[in-house]
Length: 356
Image 1 (cartoon, rainbow, N blue to C red):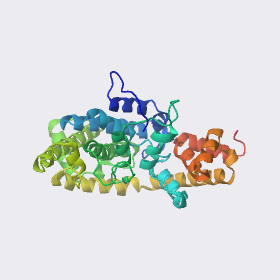
Image 2: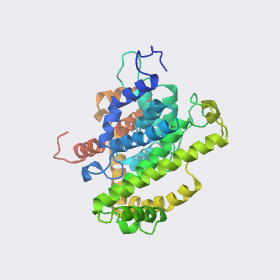
Image 3: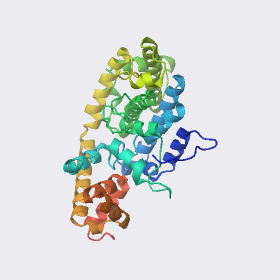
């Protein structure tokens, strides 16, 4: 968006990656919820460790398909920068609160973060990232994320193949690390998975190879095999589609009218019951539901206090309010909070003996 000289020894996408890693929004991902709120334990994934797992899987796929690995990695590292505290519960709460003021979508907010809210350079606001990276942020889509159309970011075209790869790497990462975290927390049991064909197949192979293996190593080996199976299938199937459709250029991908990257019908069939089980047994577990509901109440009560008394907001946020309006300024402030910061802020505002 702002003219800059090319860097002497880094590509534009490597520079994007580096600017993302050094941003405040990226660091805050360490204390933002994936499924388990940060204070529930050190073992569980956070939004940051999830992002790193997505980037690792996406890089592997991009390299195998001979895509732009630097761009793929940068999109993966940026894909969750717009996430709120408390995961999708926080996003849902802010979207409700902002219904009459443009709503809230974490992809669009991620673009707002990198274009405007990160303040690091004297020449321009934001991180001044490449067009391709910014398009990848707004067109990110999974079962939990909806892509957005923005004027100037090719709203009528398909996402780049690098973006499509990141979307699927995101699904592979959260499906498998949520299995790991769910089993570790005790909310899931291995018996829950035994009837699933994909689990039974891999479990049988591991038992044949390792007749005596402890539960922890067995869990790790199964999850490792699940990731490998899905990544291998994705690479093979995407290569097949590229050859079948005779796609050899970036523009052909953009104008194809459908996504090219994807799993085979066989793997899609095997993945479906696994994902259904996670939704039923983990995401709808009463403890997860309770925390999600509590998180929404935290967010809504914080928002109301700030709306009733904007003078209680820090001075940088008050400046933002003058530019973008009270509600959007408050929304930006809350969306940027970590779980820990939001809980501390709640205590300061509502607990009478807590220092403000």
